[in-house]
Length: 319
Image 1 (tube, rainbow, N blue to C red):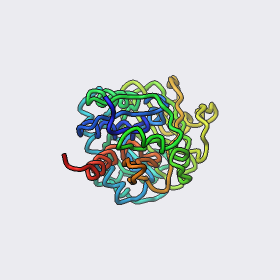
Image 2 (cartoon, rainbow, N blue to C red; image 1 turned 120 degrees about the horizontal axis):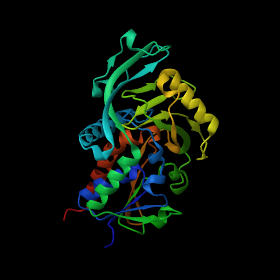
Image 3 (tube, rainbow, N blue to C red; image 1 turned 180 degrees about the vertical axis):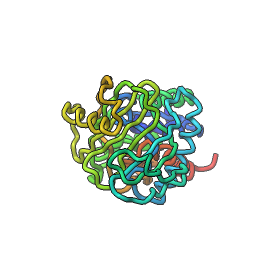
């Protein structure tokens, strides 16, 4: 059966968009030269956090939609999503984030703060085991009738000949595929260790911090981060960076110092000054762009995917 919509990219943006389109009744195929497990999304931490994304008004709406979806999905253990309480803390004074009301964040009392931190906020939010979650999305997509094809596109002109609707969720690959020089890779490295008994997340949210420090617990493992190498397209794990990550996290949570390292992950966040969610006509096909989410790919995934469906529906004649 031929597809009437093709989604380029098998990361969290592409898979979520494909799920939404397929569940709306379209025949959808995901085309990607990477399997879901090979994408940057599979290397992510990850948790809901509207992280450095613009435009702020749309990002807030997309993030809230996604928060609702992830919270609902957390009731199913097979999704890899858990609602976890924890803190974001800063070494310098700063206000609560604009999205704090969405998760009921409250300012930490002084005795709740880690050593060296002067302010922080506590809240409960979805923490996502990305390999398990991507498996869930693949299963949900195929159950809705979707299919996959291993394929590398050299141009969007090639893609729009495949179906009347094409959605470009190529992430950092959009720099070449869409000819978009605003897209830049931000290399992120993290370390996965055995969980020594940690059940709360932690993020260092100090403005302008030189290095990232975050701790995301899952049932059996803990994801430790991280790095933020702008313009670095190298996906090879760096042993020195990994050691620094573990040391920074152990300084916050001493029980991590002896935790056995299970895995090293590297991904390329698709950074852009503004998320690109736009549509255009291209050789008679509807081409929708959905990329540039930076470090907020999971956080914006459902909100952006739902908007893609709305735009596709608005472009299609009534049956």
